[in-house]
Image 1 (cartoon, rainbow, N blue to C red):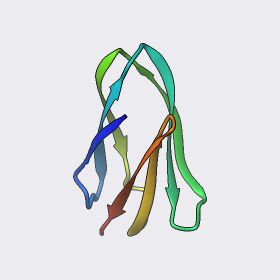
Image 2: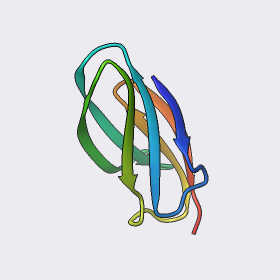
Image 3: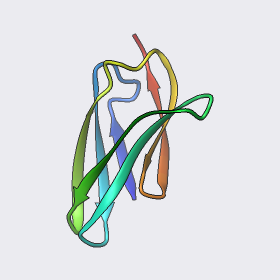
Image 4: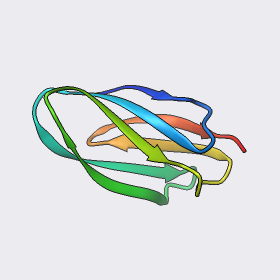
Length: 79
């Protein structure tokens, strides 16, 4: 479960706070407003709280959807 994404709006990087029930590997993806995947990767999660840091310098200003596993949350990039 995504607890928070900070900062939002973001510029150069974001911190995603994720709560995981078990130790697992999760897909981390960012989609633009048109639904195109613009960033993806896999992260190892531990049971409990996880912090994922992502570099967003390559993303243009706009609205994005951040997806970790099956959970998703919106993100605004402002330049």
